[in-house]
Length: 466
Image (cartoon, rainbow, N blue to C red; front, side):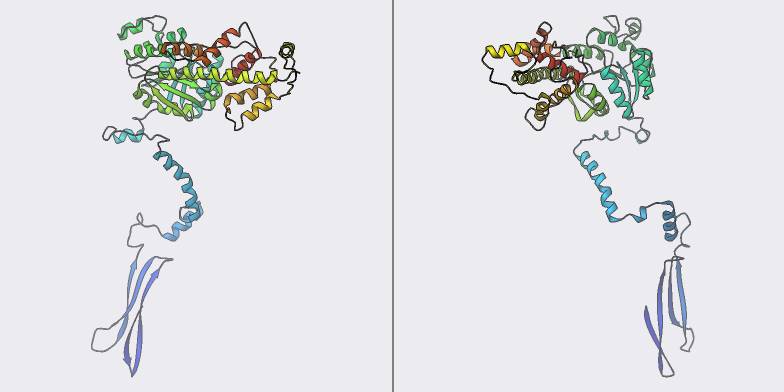
């Protein structure tokens, strides 16, 4: 605001120039100022200059602030009402995501410049689809299917059991009555995960009942036409998630490569519980094939629980050694708890009491609570482990004497393969070899150590324990 003055009959009269900013009800700027009227006389007159903000723009470009404020208040849009505290709280969700991207904890989709048209990027046609064919709905396969369904995968499954197929359907998946039907329902390029027994059955699923296949498509249709190799096309992928011998996986990968079909061998650890809630995956095969389906491994695995370990056969080799180590660890736990139990000479085993008496150990009469000891071993000790935790669960379920558990221990091959492989490589593996021999001999010599081993196998793998 400025002042100007004139003399009127000896008096000085002051005039005010005024600049007005009007917010409501109409946004505008108005200037009122005094000027001399044209002519000889000193006469002042007021002039106005007004700028109407709303009138200067079209309705499409201008939204009255007060109108917008009222509208947002009525509709519940808090964009204009967000406090500093609310903004700070929202970053608590964003910052961990940004940090995870920087550490590559969650891989971002990427592509070379000018290799993926923007139209494909927007409609997703150039990206990996979350669709999987799954053959084999046993304890492991069924739980993997259920996990993938929860992860919003389109699961198309097959199993010889109608009951298993029906369960997948009830959970929102698709189940077919045959392998050819399963293949036919998958979009190209197809990915099929196999959870079937290793050996001859697996070869028949992949290559059909005929032992030989020709690279000629017509021959493939005629010979072994009920195997996946005859049904799939170039660019498709097969993943074996069972416990196959690594040498067989190498052979299968070479054979399928002739047809342009990728093959990955995935060692899966964690038992049925892991398959349902997140497993540990060790994957072998061509790295390019692994990269294409890393999203699948990520969704099947526990957090950070999957890894590419090398070329064809490497996944099953690493899983084989894992199971050999498992043999040794279980044996040590079982033998240790057998010593704890034997230290109680008031136990129920007469032969134990007689042996202790003959060895002049009669003064040692501890009464250990094996379930509690398993519990404390699993709370911060050096031998804390899932195996010790499972033993505690077994004691709770079956009692410390494990009377309903078999003293003869089953074995599925991986321990024996580990021993044979170690000998081929000239590497001593005495602990694993002795643990394997114990299981073989337990068929004729059942024992309390065997009971513990059987109980553990039942807890983590759902194997028969009686």
